[in-house]
Figure 1 (cartoon, rainbow, N blue to C red):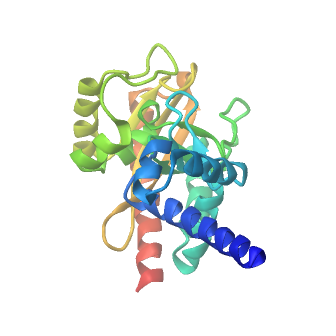
Figure 2: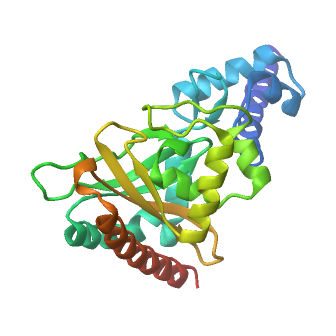
Length: 259
């Protein structure tokens, strides 16, 4: 009887962990209290589950807010499950060609709650260049790629992702005011590309464009990063045009894979 009860408790814990992970589909981030309310269990039970999932990389935690979001292990599983429409696989040859064309570091970026995650990166050939950033996680609103992805969200989803009030900054050029950011996101949606001039890292600037899937939904972004001294207005226009062509080619491949 004791063995049976222990096995039942173990299976129940697995079920709770899976339900908790599944809840991220509707909730970009979760607190322990919110998780407990969703599962109908005690906060201490949810805390133990989240600590275990955190140790295995299935969730990550914002050190400032203490809220949890999907982690890199979950992202890897999700991207691997896409198989024929794997964004990374479809994008790689186009990223390589774009790197050769613009001679700057090119990144493939996805949204991870209020953060972005660099899931692929190819360094440019210049002697002075931005290093590859695969695996790096940064606040979305401080980066060109993140702003492109945020600009694709509707107002309700954007509110869920960013919350209210001021936003954290990485440099003295970071946008930390929500009203200013909302205005910038509206302009990005109109222009089709975003820029970041030393907003995430001093001395680094970037241009980014969106990538869409077969349904026209924005699923990722191409970001081109360069030393700030090399990214003037003329170069921004050139890179935005080249990156948009690469994004359209990736989208065409994704559409073909899903057809």
